[in-house]
Length: 226
Picture 1 (spheres, rainbow, N blue to C red):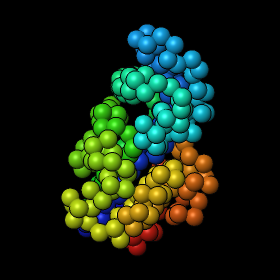
Picture 2: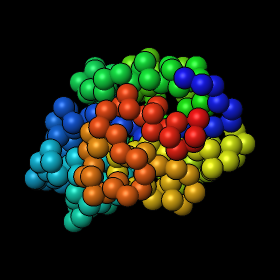
Picture 3: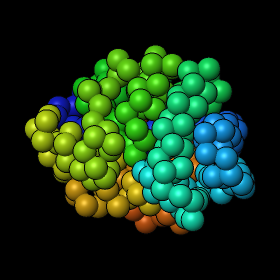
Picture 4: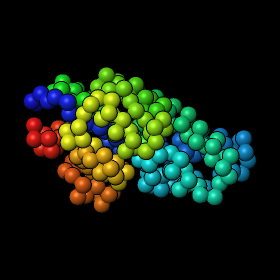
């Protein structure tokens, strides 16, 4: 792989590097039970796995508001904290799935000279849990996370400003419409992952689409003419 200078690749986490699908419904169930112990009757129905996965990729407050639109705000605040605790514990226990080839591809991209960044709507503790559990931290620049700065477009802009990189040599890799929207807002290229949680219609037409993570380098090279 040819070396490059001052080009950045930003990756979403869930549905791109990693999948929470094996545990996400149980994690929500556990978190809801914990809140119900503090505030009995706050949550009755546990959303199905498919319903939860349909919202993965958006900021957690957005996910919870969509899944539980009529729940008392105090209970929602407790659930916000409880889901973070439970999900991070499940990540650390390797209950999720790191997609095939992720570490090898990231190593090759970094060694080729790309700056690699995380651009996720996930909270910082979740991002750090995934990176630490699967020994991926070394491949990425210091994370900027949405829970600290706001929406994903702001995360992307933060990386470009911090590392003095142009949007014209930046690629956003994601699986949801939120990733497409962030790339368009900042003016970066986009690569869609069709193996993630999103539906193809969310990413179609926004850029090259890959069926496996190990296809990302070829798509990057095509976009950046490396």
